[in-house]
Length: 257
Image 1 (tube, rainbow, N blue to C red):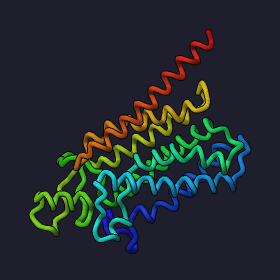
Image 2 (cartoon, rainbow, N blue to C red):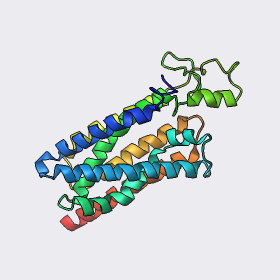
Image 3 (cartoon, helix red, strand yellow):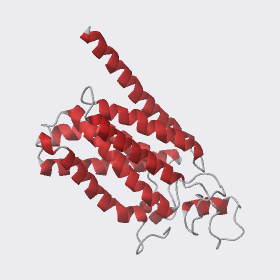
Image 4 (cartoon, rainbow, N blue to C red):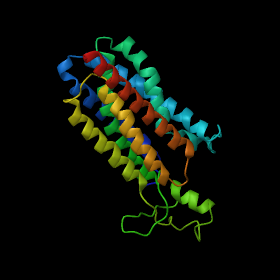
């Protein structure tokens, strides 16, 4: 683990570029049979990435009561929350797609974007491991990990008086970020498999909301420190996806009679 980063750069800053390149390549290759314009697809994804980061930052500030990390460099290094990124993509994505890539049907765009997001967020969780954040409760099992001084879990334990000395690493904790990673990756693989069996365009995107954020909401129960708003937002997004799936299934069944 490298809580102080690589060459002075936060782990997420180091990983974000290769993850973005992976996501762009995956998205374009997945839609290669739809004959989309690669240049416009790249522009669309980059624009969405900007809004996703902005949404993640605003949501993080909202959860913290708009309290900025000090020093300011700490705020610039981190302080991002996934629900904000997802909400930003849901709200802004359709508009950006309409302007930049109008030839691709919106429901199909959302399907492929959902699968891409699963794998990208699975990779982003590796930065959580490097930074020692998004961890669970203390434990002493073989799979529990201790993190170096400077990591987020170390700071939380130090502030809580759980460490004998500031030079000591953190007490072993549940590496919850690996469970988040496994959930994102597993759901991405399932959605890829189910994509060839989908009943309608847009079904994969709604399944993503239901499954991915439902799993995230469950895992948020184990986060230390617990953030109720993160869990509530994830469960709300999951419920919205399930309700939309049920309504569409109802109207499709009624129209087929």
